[in-house]
Length: 145
Image (cartoon, rainbow, N blue to C red; front, side, top):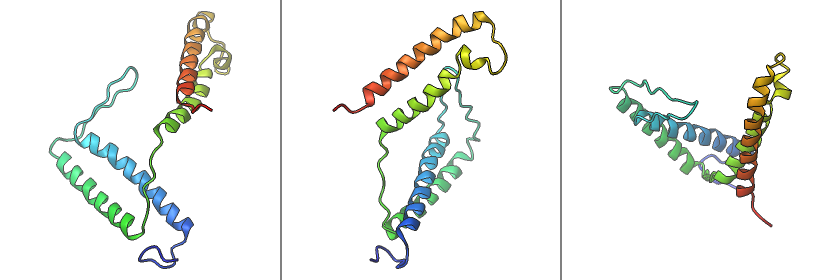
């Protein structure tokens, strides 16, 4: 079955190319946002957008050129876009973060030396509160029966 201009392209090869180009495309979205001046400021996470304003248009032009190539490859190799399931992505992050937050409690901090009791008394209830919120987010996003 020939699906594009390359007659011997196997499904595994097509899949690998699609995955790589999808990751590239996702990165280009971030690059473009930064080229447009994006600078996120949250509680403990801050972006310092130090991109030279004179070079931002050049960066945007390179991003557009790469996207043109990606689009050409998509069309000629008949690659299909895969929608990103945001709910599943958030769920995945919640499960991963749940482990990290749990390991922030006194029981696990002992692996780095005995933490002060005041720290455990202060930190553990807040970590458990965060875990409850993460659990609630998982409940919100898990499809029902």
